[in-house]
Amino acid sequence: HDPEAYGPKMVEDVVNLLDHLKLEQVDYVGYSMGSQIGLRLLVAHPDRIRRAVAGGIGLNVTTAWRANEAVARRLRGDETDESAAALMFYNFAVAVPGNDLEALACCISGRSTPLTEEQLAAIQTRVQVANGGADPIARDGRGLAELLPHGEYFEVPGRDHATAVPSRAI
Image 1 (tube, rainbow, N blue to C red):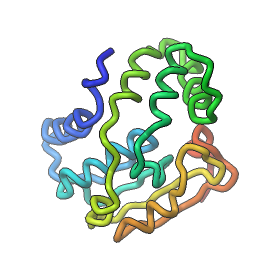
Image 2 (tube, helix red, strand yellow):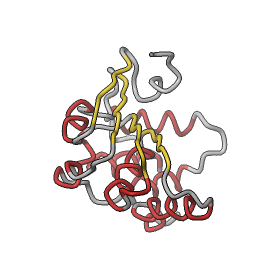
Image 3 (cartoon, rainbow, N blue to C red):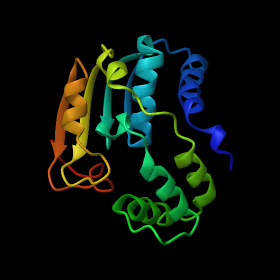
Image 4 (cartoon, rainbow, N blue to C red):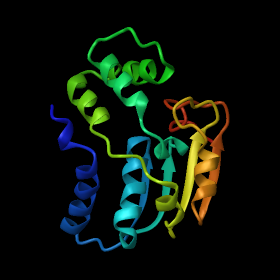
């Protein structure tokens, strides 16, 4: 329940896991927060990722995550924020029995500083950005893919943040 246990430490957790498994370079697939971790990994340790898929993410990685605090407040029971992101994350979290809502709130509020366009433009790894076309959270995935020198965009039509992953889009 400590926001400092998240953010940049999550990237180092991935590096430590790769080291533990004796994997020098891997293909990376992440979704939502996992995509943020993957992009930060590509910035900090570009040699560890051969290619990547980043789903459920957009240009919002380059802005201050003002929505994070609203999501954290909603997870803690504050119903005053009616934003789509806060409600979607809350509904997703409570749908899984046993989820620790305080730990999730700390994870959301402990995220790192936004990535810069310069950091993203320096990523030389091939990255596919894949989002649901109706996702209110992953804003402008196409714009994110365009910032990446070897980025490409894939849209899952009609799907949102919660329904893009289980779809059968080709």
